[in-house]
Image 1 (spheres, rainbow, N blue to C red):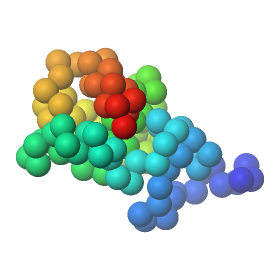
Image 2 (cartoon, rainbow, N blue to C red; image 1 turned 135 degrees about the vertical axis):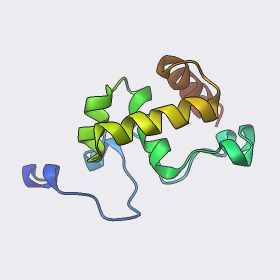
Image 3 (cartoon, helix red, strand yellow; image 1 turned 90 degrees about the vertical axis):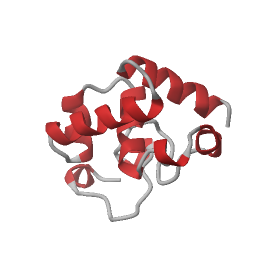
Length: 107
């Protein structure tokens, strides 16, 4: 990957890994892990974009960095974070990140 690829938007439906320029989680996020799908009831399952945001949160990204990395607004990030916390029933982003890592390791 050349230096010029860093600012280009990924193609629709692409998977994102540390090597694709999206270091959020370092694993493909087009589909959540089976362990997480089994754990969450259908009305609490995260969208693909929420998984991408959660992956970034789990890597310690701030909302500003998530917005820049995923090319979305800060308000959109705040909305996604709020939805993630509600769906995972976690009180804060640290607890959501811990749950993400716990469920990822159970895979």
